[in-house]
Length: 535
Image 1 (cartoon, helix red, strand yellow):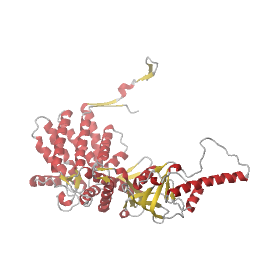
Image 2: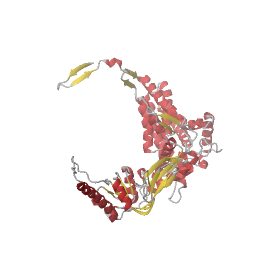
Image 3: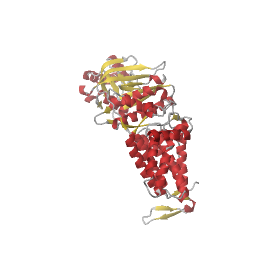
Image 4: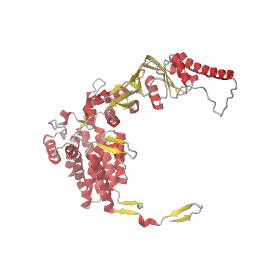
């Protein structure tokens, strides 16, 4: 390296090692990129569908994650290759936007890349392939609109929503309790949903987990659970019609901000100091009592003396409650968070019908349940399970189910699952291919072939013979003109997904096709990869 100076005297470095950079050009680059993308898709292929396998990932510091969720698998894998990183971001964006279908979208992109490779070998220009894919994805998305169905539900009749959430949960480890978890997810979403605006704020649903118990003990609390207990063991464990004061100021004697030193040379002075502190606490506790609070929730700690006084004045209190939980409690009970004691007024208190402390098993684990709140727009799903990994995985699965319920409230169109929608799109795209003259026709045909890869992977994971099963279902769809025939993964004995109640959200499927096509177009357009040399 050589150091040179520009006209302002700032040093900059001239690199001599230009020829040491590794560089891939033209077809070489495209093939390397495609194989990187395919490698990522191959990992996720086996975890697609109800019979999909789980992956176990170990992070550098030894934490183990066992998961079936495509986005989580890719997040946890340490991926170095730039193209593989694109696949990770693809599944992440599906996760953020839709929440479900994160595995399918990567498998789809991988299949498109695989088909593109064959076309490149025939000597078709990558840009023409990309354009053909773009046309084909438009045809597929429009066709999905045609075969979708509206799903009417009311607050009284939530069965349609529950069925769709069950489809999502059936590919997860929790599928033995999928009915119960789906109902919990739907009720939680409907509790916080704004049905006029068709909007759901998922932040109002808190998902808590505690190890112990069994998965069937999972419950939905119309209120908040806080992983804390009363600050004094002798405080009442159950308060009805609680009026809650939420404080963010510490229950401690005031400390001057500057450095200070108190000289005490006689006992009297010490007594006065103590009385002063005592009086200060007395005023604080009295202030809370005067306002009419029957429960104090504090963000900071208490002095032991304050704790003792609160106990004597029987004012139950909870300390060290986190900021996020405080906000949720405030939303649920309609309280205002009070930063200073001087500002406590009766209208700033929250109301809750019941506050109870619940202990679990033989351990000292206790939690506070704040229920029957004035404004029940915040709910908590409380998960139990045999071990930590199970609970984490249940949280992820439940997140998917919550997202599906939210998407159905936003847009209540559905398509049928089990690969039926993909097969139907594949037939439609294949039929439309003949209308396009030019090289794009090849690309549109291979898009149709790539769409078949998802039902194929489903059949493969279910232990069926992939090609036989797929061709049988495809011919059945064409013969009966019935877009609801899919792969019978659970061996129910019928291919009709309408009878099996396997649904997917329409926006989720459309998003999958659009995102996968965009990423593949981007990868195909890269013809030169310049990377720094490996030392």
